[in-house]
Length: 183
Length: 217
Image (cartoon, rainbow over all chains, first blue to last red; front, side, top):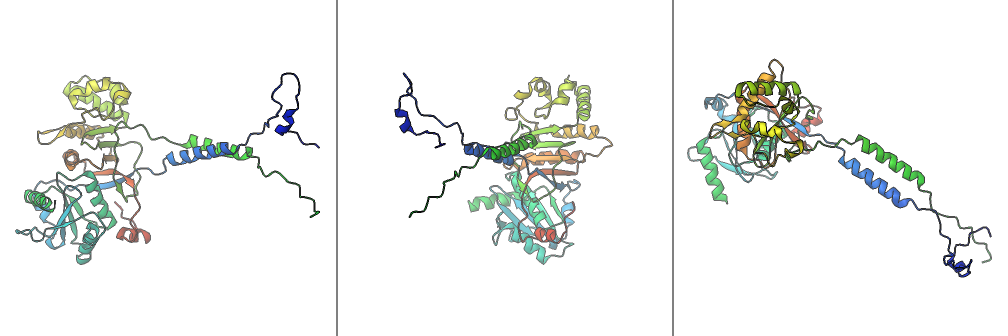
């Protein structure tokens, strides 16, 4: 009745001379894809807007005296020395390095039984809070990430006293030998 | 059977309004997006649980890229002017003070500084620059001089925002040389730029934070 005859069947009727197209096309555009596009762009901008700003991690350096006595001030029983080698290797020993390197152990950055976090927690549990000092000695082969990760572990395990110091030659050799042995 | 068929109504919803809303939201996000400034040196920083945000102004950043090259950025133009003038006086480098003030970062030995400033902004790519020499073995750690200039420029005022932005894969010796330069100039306290990371659940720090405490650094 009031409906428009848009069927192609109606095109069979010749309208006039030479007019081939009898079909009337609809002018209504479906806007759904446009909306999809709009939302896609929105999600793009949501994700590229910086929501997380880079954070800053503090580091305090000990006054440099270049004298080994500074390092020995820490009570032997409370000191844990971490040596950072290459390929994310960590070696550690408690107290003073034994002449036969018997207390020289190895660890890694994982959270397993021998991971460094457990080592730190064990040391923390067995030491007086006032005596606990972690001495961090990176070697020439370790990466910046290793150093930052260790400092992060200090924060995660709430270890208040720690220091970043220069490695001794014997320790360096020991690390090199141990790395060759494990490879 | 003989029941008249219910008149069929169109189920197509008019999407015009939805489209308007979508584009309004889009416009909002376009206007509020702050694009990170184009970095000439790409550095992937490590993650840390530290929650303190890095300052966006009034900073001195020492960047160490993956190959161990060191770059220096500052944003305080007065201090840069001071440094440029003292470099011209002490080393007679003949630097263009204005170009120095406008430069966003430095990454060449002192001798090449003048030619570096003569380059256009878009030619100053970190990958092509040699970086500030930090050779402690040969005794040529120019970072020490840079930090010295910065220390005198900041005389009297406290430099609160000294940052080190190191790449994950940079080796320790570069970092050590930078620390050496800091220590020689009495910058005992500095911060490292990291990406934020969630505190591991169940760890000591996690429990501490849960109780409302925090390690005040």
